[in-house]
Amino acid sequence: EIKYKRLKMKGVLQYHFVFPNNESFFRFHKPNKYGDDLTNYRSDFKYTNKTKKGVRGFAQGRTAHAFRNVYPLFNKENIYIGAMEISFSSENLQDNFTLISKMHTHFLVNKTIFDANAWNRDDLILKYVQSAEHKNYMMTMTKQHTYQKCVVENRLRLKPILNEIDTNIKKTKPFSLYTKDTYNNTTSIAFLPIYGNVENKILAWIVAYEENKFINTTLRNTFYIRITLFTILLVLFYFIYRTLNQKEILEKLVDKKTTQLKDINENLEQRIIIEVEKSKKIEKRLSQSEKLVSMGEMIGNIAHQWRQPLSVISSSATGMQLQKMTGVLEDKEFFKTCESINNNAQYLSNTIDDFRNFIKGDREKSIFNLTDNIDSFLHLVESSIKNHQINIILELNNDINVNGFKNELTQCFINIFNNSKDILKDLDCDRYIYLFQQK
Image (tube, rainbow, N blue to C red):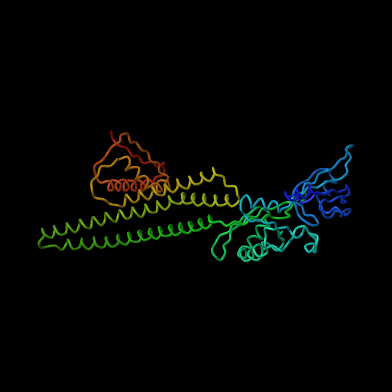
């Protein structure tokens, strides 16, 4: 009896011996109770006595559920004499969860494994109450649990997602959800099904609760990304509208000036000088308008180039979140995912740098590397190259430095590329654009 008490302190629930006809012979936890028929209550004893094979796993008895191990017994003459059970309480498993992962857990037991009035029996080893998670499941109360926290508070917390819980429980697979309390704190809730040791059906669930700040951060970042994309689209539409509007205004202005030139009769030389100056201003505006058109197209290219890295960042963060909630996130996978997110963020940053350098519009001469200038130009039109299935062939043999206007050379490359692209669109052939330099 002393040894049995020590074993109970380590999580052993009971030792139990039965005859081959499923009649109870001896219970360590209740030595005075024997001779009762367990055929209709213990399918694991029934299975072992019939097949003479051991069975292990979750099972519900008359007075408690447990993780039970049932073994066949033979005498020295190898004659079968019955079965014995060693079972471990779920309370011990919950204690380990709390100690190791610091997560609050409890068991949900399906009502159908008891008779209708069995929940109110006086001899139940574990105490059961109606769970907050699902109407068809009872919760086991241990020294770690209180009715206020596990039932009353959880009913308020889980109310918005009860239909989701019911839908996922019917799918009979592990799942996890999250919910927020009145203070906007996020709690992740994981459900793990427990199958019977004989019947291939779910008899119980382990439910784990954990406050999760990572989900809050992910939701906030997702919101910021959506706001950023929305802002970029608004800017894009603004540039397109402004460009189209300026073109229409300039066309009308050119028509008006053409008519005025025809009517010049006096002070021709002075008028020519005045009109030449005005024409230069118009030409400058037209040049700026063309650049705005290019900028609008490049903004579209940049928005397209951003989709894949943003999708990779979002998918990586969400995947890492799910792995963390299910407890399978390893350090190697964590650092690998962080590296992927950083690489894609660097790609987004480089794209912005190239676009920013292009729109500066500096008119000062400077010495710059031709190869670097071509690489920057290709980065700006990368999306258009891919969309139109164009192959760029580079033949750059020498490292040449140029003293000139860097942004204007980039604009020339873009104009040449756009003209070539427009011609290639009408040709039914392979599309190649050659960029080379003379030795």
